[in-house]
Amino acid sequence: MKLIALDLDGTTLNSNKIISKETLSVIKKAQAAGHIVMILSGRSPSSVYDELLKYGLNCPVGGHNGTALYVNGKLIELNSIGQPQIQKIALEVESEDLPYNISTNKGIFAPSNWDKRFEQVVSSGGVPKKYFSNRHFKMFTTPPTVYGHSFFNKVHEIIDNEDFTIQKFLILTLDPKQMERLEKKLRFIDEIFVTSASPFNLEVTHINGNKGYGLKTMASYFNIPLEHTVAIGDEKNDLPMFNIAGLSIAMGNAEEEIKLSCDVVTLSNDENGVANAFEKYIFKGSNVL
Image (cartoon, rainbow, N blue to C red):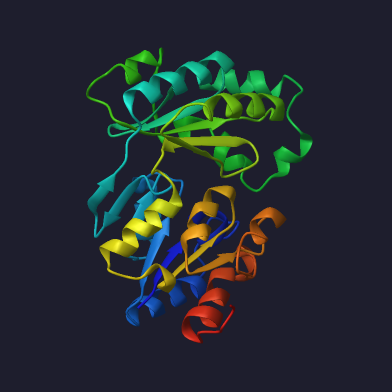
């Protein structure tokens, strides 16, 4: 039995945001053979489940980069950011006046002036032209209203409310200089994990809110040795699970840095790269070591 952790966007989903029939077929084939296939994504758990529901898939889920772990819809572990850290993160993000959102136990919240913040960054002239054609640009720059997020006027409405627990800050950092400045400040905050799922965003979670921890925890839950785990992904937030997995597989559409961090490289997400990886390394058991 193997535990296979799949990233969602850019990996399991193709560029049309669809799970191809080839990919769907190998996932179901692996499950029928007794393997555990989990989705380990930067998305919220509800967003992941919405995608799986479209295809009739039942998989363990690690949402918010492994911060929230679910099996059969039941929460098995949740790692929320500590209150002292939340205050420091919010202070640094607000000082940059950036568009961002906060994932909580009561839904996802964004500043009421998110659109204004976004337009301010875009009109600053500091956004590289190549970002506008990046495959993740639309997903990260879609206004919160489209996703049905809630809003706050002042961030303290959320971070000072004892009824809220916070799992992730998702920050849109389109200006590279601003991103570098903010990331340096955030990395001085203890007990948090900072990563990204594109060249222009930062994701901040609890120190255990990363895909490596999520994969390790799920492997322990199913009593599967780490050497029998497989991780497939395409972005920097996948690196922690690549470092943990017995076999790490980069998508063909991943950046060179990601490919160099993996054991092997499969085809792109538009070439059924996940299906190719399953056929070559799961079902045929090719030796890549």
